[in-house]
Structures are given as C-alpha cells and as structure tokens.
Length: 206
Image (cartoon, rainbow, N blue to C red; front, side):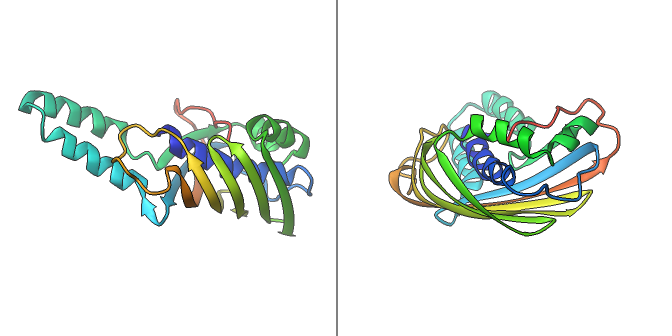
C-alpha cells in the first residue's frame, strides 16, 4: 500500500484506539485467524488510488513494448492497495480490547493528536479529535469504530484541515496535497475469513 494510504488509515484507526483507552472495552472480541480488510480513501472527493493507477498507465504508454510488459506485470503483482489480509493471534485479539495496551500503541503512533470519545454502546465507539502536524495532517477529525460481530468490524473517519506530503506516482497539481484545504474520507470493513493464517503477515500496528 502506498505510504500516504498507510498514513491515513493508521491515523483513523489509531485515533479510535487512543479513544478506547479511556473508555470501556469494546465488545465482542475479534476471533483469532485470517482477516481481510477492504478500505477506500477519498481526498477532496477523489479516489487517489484510481488516479495514481491512471497516471501509471499513462506513463507505461511511453515505454518500449518489452519494458512496458515488465512494468505492467510488476504493477499487477502489487494487487489492490485498498485490500489487505492479516493474521490476528489469540493474544493480539485480547489486546485489541485491552485499554492499556491500546493506549501505549496509540501514544506512540499519534504524538500530536488529541482525542475525545463518546462510547454510544458496547460495540460502537465514536470520536472527535485534533491533530497538529501528525504525519503531515493538521486539522480536525471525527469517526467511529463498530464491532459488528466477532468476525466483522467497520471503521470510518473524516478529516478536515491541511495535508502536506510528497506522494510518488501522483499526477502533479493534485488539489489538497500541497498544504491547501483538504477533506479526507476513509472507510474500512474488516472480516474474518479463515481460522488458519497460512503464512499471512501478522496484524500491523494501526
């Protein structure tokens, strides 16, 4: 996944995690095993993954046929940057509902953000927050995390502010990426797909 998507996603979910550290644990606890996440991020209403791929395809047209085929194969092997599979162990699943463990990780990830929470129910947590330069983003954000079941969780957030980061492979002049006003919308659905991880990477810090 491109760095900017990792930044946005980790900002959203880590903010939720930070909020949960001062609230009651969210239930139910996720079931250990292989999980698949599907995410979509819009910046100022535009899907940047789609734009990045369009720019890559345009660049490929200027290459010799053999080199173009090699580059196309490499891009195809990268897969969909909005989809990830990760392994959650029993220990990791337990820590996902442990406020102290979550707080320690969130403090490390988001040193320049302040979060306030409202736990609407045992399975739903909403939050609002302010970031001052965290990973290039300065502004306000709000969102929620919902534990739909032991095998499904959903998160979303919206951020409004300014965002400054050099993003490789993006078309020049992309609105909102040069310190101008930006609205970030991120949504993610994560589902359990198997009891065995079969060599999948462990769940990443978010």
